[in-house]
Length: 117
Image 1 (cartoon, rainbow, N blue to C red):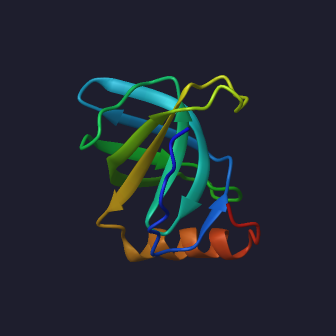
Image 2 (cartoon, rainbow, N blue to C red):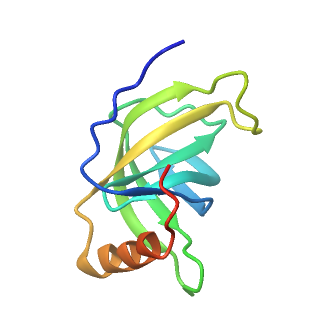
């Protein structure tokens, strides 16, 4: 069983948020696994290679419009067989050039969710 080292700069929280994304003709509509100011983890059946730049539409509760931002896939792994979900891949997406308004909305969301993953 692989071991992953945590090198996180930002607090992350478990979060099941709707996220849509697109890149080079690849479209996906899935849910986040966790979120931080630096990026998100997404459970998806869609295989997206590390290094791929994606445009993301993240739907926060109580927001009329999704956050629209860019991210880079920085890691990808197959889920353990013991993890239950319909998706078999988890990808880590690091945000690129996060605008201040979106940063503030993400920060508020994260601070109101006190369960760290």
